[in-house]
Length: 266
Image 1: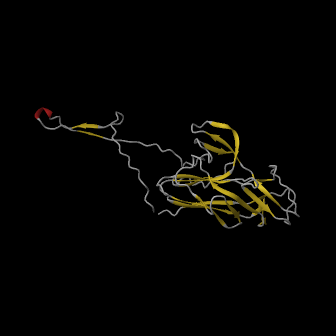
Image 2: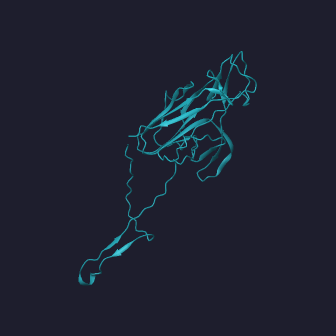
Image 3: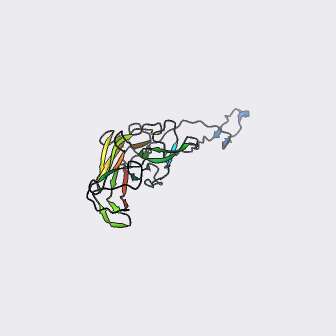
């Protein structure tokens, strides 16, 4: 187990609040020394960057975001050292944003994931503007007790809602452009995108796909956000549905996404 780093703070505290004092025998009158014993005390509150709140990945002035649809992250709120603050659901639409997409069995189709609808809050907790749209992203927090981690995602097969036996293994999602967010809210050592900035990942069902990794170089905690960015000609996240599949009108399919952050704690 890696030894947690301790921050030593030099402090002399002579506060009237909670200060204990014991005066020894007052022997000054006969030439003996006098002495006093006091206590130095300090009480810390913790700035809870790792409490699971979601920092604004593109923010330059601090603050947080609250997605309208907030997937659960990893839920390990008892672990203060490594957390998945946020990972996205992918809701696929057609080019106009309609959540009911048209499938042509002779041509197939490629559909884009909706962006995240969020409310933004400044450092004082005041909402900034109305509901805004930002790119899909994943966000990871680590304390200074963690000096490395890797981040992966594993997609399951798309299954017909309510009928888990009807699967479509040929329907495959892709993350097309992964970049590290560089706003001021993303602090500490910057993680690296596996395959380099702008890497694209095909989420083949059942295969763990590497998103990024982190190696500590400055002995501090960090918040890192992976953004799945759209380009001029392609959405940040897409779903490819090939031609010839057995899909009926009003069918709805769902595939699980398992996001995993793991540290080789020493």
